[in-house]
Length: 437
RNA sequence: GCGGGCGUAGCUCAGUUGGUUAGAGCGCUGGAUUGUGGCUCCGGAGGCCGUGGGUUCAAAUCCCAUCGCUCGCCCCA
Image (cartoon, rainbow, N blue to C red):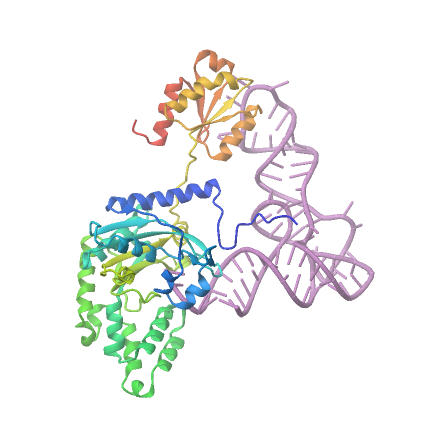
């Protein structure tokens, strides 16, 4: 039986053209976050499974993590996320790091589940975190960084919306304003989290069913449904509006305004799935009706470093997945044409392979990436190969060119040919490439 | 884990109520044109019709199973 050529389910092969796109995307990410002073770190792809048990729900670890036993009988997981790992790294050097830390990484992550659009088993996720900087400036900077990445991909504010909420506000609403118990609160939060996938009537019926008769008589169900319809902070009931988290949200919105971020909105229905968030949460939504989904998000999670037995460190961060980002860039037609790493394809005319080595070596020494076609095929086929590879320039080398020291260089996109010395060809190609030198 | 859709050439797909040797476009390849791509013309290769079983004189087509892909649900780090 023949072996399959398909990649493992939910994972991707990166052929050179795919890798080119990935390099472009990672390049924009790196340039942007480094412009804010973030430093890159990395870590092993394997962690002891307890690391995820401590923080996540049992179900996720058991059913959605790639886990196995190593030869020494230790239970090991392929990392499904980077946050516990980076928290571990910070905890390990808690006393000696220069806070605030601005750290980023682009790890490869795995989760075991049925693949679907925008969600594969394997993905790469930019993780950006600030450690040791309490207060809204860190939230503002993290959101500003996320916004800058999208801008540097060419996105404009009409293409996406940044939704903000506070976990402290949600907790206050559940415990003090609605007076529901912890179990009810959890259920309601999950329900609200998917309310936009349901129709209004079904949602309201399910909300109503969550409350006990006495709570319903006290108006809790109607209070919640009414509250979730409110879009403006000023329209919130006074008891909610006076909670301290509201001032924090307003302060954050003010900072974002100063940073010229015009598409950030308060959204009381924003929950985010996990419960390790302790304060501000945010999520970036694609406005394209064809791809209307949450692209990525983040927030403050002050408790994780402390799980490693050291004094807690306040942390704000976000994760941006490559799959959803690529969907966004495609939906908004933001992917630029990507060119080959190869600058020049050397087309050899006749039996000149040996004699052509000198000039080809010169081109490389002067900084060009040159692929040589040594197949001995006729020129037409060599040219076709170069075009198919996406190489921008062809240089023709035959007896005549070698004798004269002048080579025909052709722009394969326009078809225009010129004859030049090797050094002149180098400057033409570098000019196209955008080099300064 | 649950549900919908789809599996025919390298790719995108057509294939009538079951009926000869399964097609098209693109791509690949040879030539027209042995020192120069894209346009044109002529030729060629390439198919276990996902897999296994069943119904039938006859199956790409109908039935069952299975595998794979895909979209959604659950969940979402």
